[in-house]
Image (cartoon, rainbow, N blue to C red; front, side, top):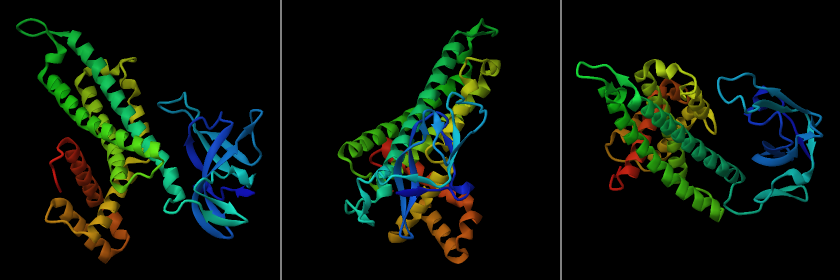
Length: 328
């Protein structure tokens, strides 16, 4: 059997959707065999029986939220809960005669678990684009029909220069990110169908999509809100639900964490193959030298440079998608 335990608050899991209602759960936990950690593994377990939590499981309501109160988000922890051996999802790695075995060479167990994170990030990115597009469409319909006074007769609100310019700008920016979304979905679908692990390039594309879709949607929806005056304060217009974008920002991988990962991966690639005199390469060199002399503390001391490199990576990936001829 396996003993599932949350020894401290850091081992609790927050923001579990349907955590207050689900009977079954897939729990990802660090597997320890004979005192040696084997990394994150997935366990299918019974959380509730006859509507009541299994002994040893604690679930607490996350409380009232500004958005998404239809989801019963919970904080969940475990106190010495025994799981049967069969609970381990062991297609790629498991136990045989008490020993840990890797069943498929070259496939790390966490890589296959992480595969679902890539799917989730892609879905969330796509949903933010749908939200933003819908908000813009609804607002433009209103603005097209809202008449404003002018010396030469009433004109539609949508003809105001700053608003009409914003509509055009938003359509251009959304289209770029949607092209990246289509590429990520197509390539990720191939991996899911073939049961293969996304390569480093696709992992990067998914991370960039997650961040760019959300940040672009937040930026453009906020700008739209500023230009529509009191209409944006009215219930039922969609603006009251903009915190949905905030929710997406930290779901399936916080945007800031993903940006730090982009920079870390870029530094690792740069250390193996320094590239030219581009701004991206120069920034990697600068950060690398700081880390060499200042250690891990230099990462936080240079946080602006860390995020700057991530932004360069995202700009490059976006350019490569919208302009296939572009090169580093």
